Image (cartoon, rainbow, N blue to C red; front, side, top):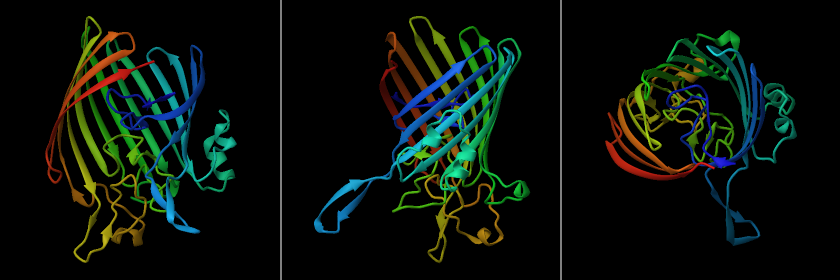
Length: 330
């Protein structure tokens, strides 16, 4: 298949696969029973291309980009219609052909990464969904990028995580209202191995994070409503408030990476000597975003969507735009 993948329990954008990237090719297999569900995904990721000269012919060259892949396993346990629990494991790797160890749907990612020399970027996530009452659903997801148990709670660079929780309610038969909170720790989704300007093991595709679109060193509150109408018409509206800390250059001209860029895993700054990081450090760029969307599906699996978006932040220039999409869902 070739599409945007969404993985994770969320009424908006999950922190596992948020679905805001460019399209990418992937293969997916799985099985499902009444109480269990298993899924394996292997995807081909892209990155920034660079010009490579031919050393024997200085006037000739070519555009190249590193080979990059993502493998994911998801196991869901469904003891009852009111509750389910899921475990995810993911790895991003590159600079080589697809690994047989990661193509094996039943081979654990973490043990495979260790066996391959710890060259890659592995992550895991825990997720639960509860339906405590009719028409009400709550969800919570914890994604762990790196973890050393002795460093938990000490703001260590060796502990990177993201968390999301939310609740949704059908306030009418055709209206779903939801509220969600998302926090992404500094340096989450990043990786520290660079190659010719590319952090090829970062959790990104075409320089855009695979996870939640707010990126690392950020948090967000979001309220949304989705409405379904006859004739396969759907409308959506949302309002979100986001806080984020961005990397910056200090007065001496030194670049300070506070963990605000998913495409830069180099750890710099005064906190590096102590092995600590600070949430929302750096240049603060807080702001609001409003979205209104309308979609119509005149033919099954073919739809047109209209979106209006306005964003206003402290540092980033205000943005307002209108977007039209033609979507094929085969």
